[in-house]
Image (tube, rainbow, N blue to C red; front, side, top):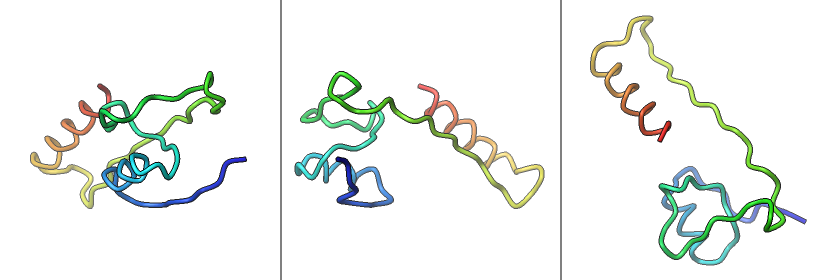
Amino acid sequence: DWRIVYSTTTVESKAAAVEAGLGVSNLTRKSMRPAMRGLGELDGLPPPLSAEFGFFTPDETPNSAITALMRRLMTALNT
């Protein structure tokens, strides 16, 4: 049986909880620390769920700084 034992909004605190042995988590490979290892279906876990991200701005046409930030984030998420 699986249950939630820890909930957080930051990747750093999620990684710290995994390193402390509280359980497993859904981290990206980039977020994994050296002491961690990837788990998958061979370890008895279900296939990972997909995630969707959205960008919301107050203006229909965001300014150049927001556009640059969105492009940088999309590039980082696609690698």
